[in-house]
Length: 179
Image (cartoon, rainbow, N blue to C red; front, side, top):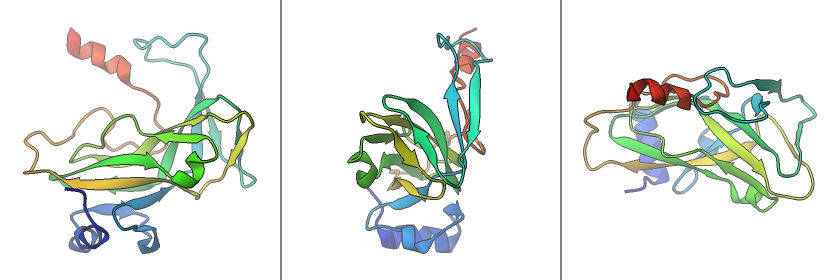
């Protein structure tokens, strides 16, 4: 069941859901808007090898005048908010319609599992034929919260738990599990 604005406020009031910084005006009828943090990552490899733990990246700080995303460019960004989900609440991230209508696709690859804690890394793609300028602090996405039928038996404790700032892929760690 997707949580309403009332349920989101109740979870925050009870201390079961933590969002820092929290802005009550960002609560929507069935979601919570999150804002763009201050740094982005651009992959700088000629070929991305998913087994490579040392993938070359460029980390940029978004200046006050904003950051231009060139047409057909992909980058990673982060939410300003640090969230802590209880073990019976999962979430998914959706881009905001107002930005999507400009050609900016905002994703978070997969669910935010119950028990996750950290800032959310976002995948941004400019599908437009002209550059798009983004600014730190803009409402970039919305998180939709859903209640599990029961508390997770194995809440999230994975490789992105506690992440702060934009976090590049750690898919190379999956190969350690296969050994």
